[in-house]
Length: 266
Image 1 (tube, rainbow, N blue to C red):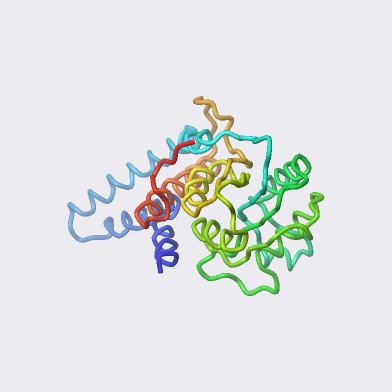
Image 2 (cartoon, rainbow, N blue to C red):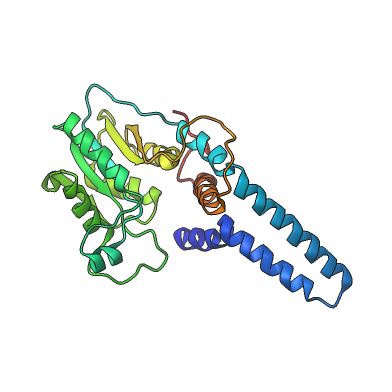
């Protein structure tokens, strides 16, 4: 129930969708017969337009992403017992249609796993990821099937991997994979996921009893605060959406008891 509710709430809370709904509300206010409602609608429409212009110019998304991406820098223990990678962005439908693995967000994660698998040849390897869609598209493949193809493409011997394909969110990534791997608290595991997603992932896996160390991939910022200006609304709103999604996830997971703190310690 919490999974469905979180997906429905996010549909309205996602910045792009939220701005569209606000503009729609402004349009209806402008059609009102009451003058005060019309005036309020015009003012609100102007305010939203100015805010969108500000977002198009200034790298607000980078400013929001940096604290998330910088929170957990990479850690490389001398000994590693296992490596677990969280799925993200695999598309079974497109993979089936195009005849090649389509995994936009996970591509850098796969490269990271390939590098780590060579560095720690004795480590156990696990992929964790089912569909995160509220209504998954019908396909003969699932996310794990796509990941298996993608990981094989970058040189991973997938026969040595465990594939968990039922999880729908990060909380389930941690708990369902723990049920398969039975990690010992003394074991050292590397956790591979996008850098922006690492704080929530680390908190979830720690809560589920894993002794994990961060191996972030897929950075979207250089980690430095700057104010370089570009007129790029699509790019900026995409970054804002990614950042807001993670802050939304941290707050909601803390409220649901999936993690112990809204801002986990490195």
